[in-house]
Length: 93
Image (cartoon, rainbow, N blue to C red; front, top):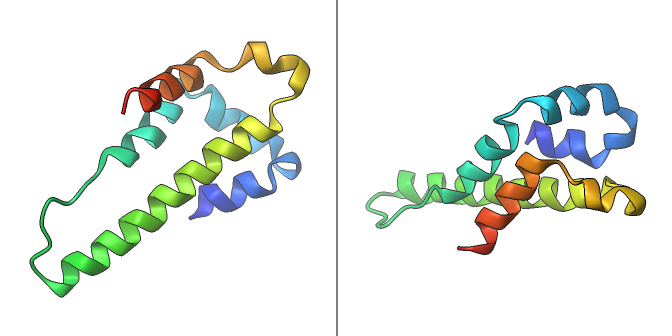
C-alpha cells in the first residue's frame, strides 16, 4: 500500500504527509476502511478479495502505529483531534 510505504519513511516526506494530515476526513476515511468485512465466502475470488482486504487492514494499523511513533513525546498531548477521535472509535470495537 502506497500510504504505508510513505509513513514508513515519514521523516523524509513531511510535506506530503502534512497535507494528508490536514485533510479533515483523512483519518476518518482511513480508519473507516477497517470496518469492511465479509460475512460469507462463496467463491475463490471472494477468498482472494478477503486476503487483500486483510493486507490493507494490516497496512492501516501500521500507519496508525507509525503516526503515534512519529508524534514527539512532548507533543503527545497535542495529538491531532480527528486522529484522536478515530482512536476512540477503535477503542469501542
